[in-house]
Image (tube, rainbow, N blue to C red; front, side, top):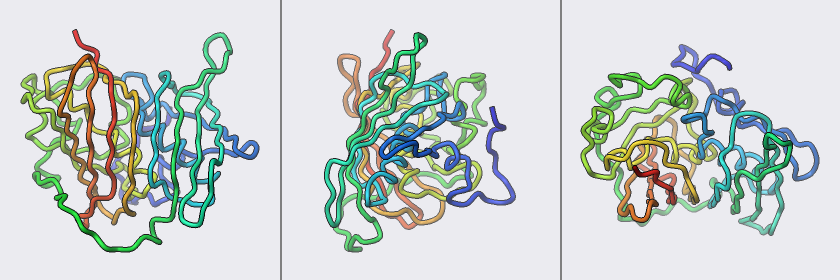
Length: 286
């Protein structure tokens, strides 16, 4: 496994970061791409859903005539694991401003049988071609500056090997949402954090697909521990993020029957809402 990324004197740029290398796809044939899922983006040995979405998002950006994800919905069918995978895409429709396609990621099980891990339906366009008018009641989350927030390295007792993805990100959580890490969850299903890459890479539309699924689950602040696997995730990318760290806010209103919804907003350094998402996740109670 390559050495985990860390804050470096020379910032990684778009296209030459660990995230870019680990989401890269190789076109084998029209609509068919080979990829190596990196162990560096796992949580409890499962590949992070946002990272997987970025991998499929990169393949669709190559397969479709438009380059930016506008809306992308993923259904997670089986747990992905680090190693080789194949992405197959299909162009559903192309137009002047939007194109739509599907993508599925496949791996082989222990018996050598192909198994589908994730299936995506997405619409792509060109974010830079959108008008710049904004009419909104949404407001960016308010929480302390980066140096007053807490990251995984500040945890009193880190769990060895539980989350390699944390080494590749700059996550600084709002102190009001870290009670779970101290054994005293607040009971409020909220999570807020600064988000960036540990190697200094700035965010782009593709990395927003990761940002919406990078924070600890809101269920932790409800007193629930353990794995909270994503069943379905829909992301809307609203505009190209400005350079600098992002602010991510996640909330849950309802946990019932072993499932919860998680709503996420991502704001850039220019106080613009750059991405929104909602996911349905399974909660392992007991």
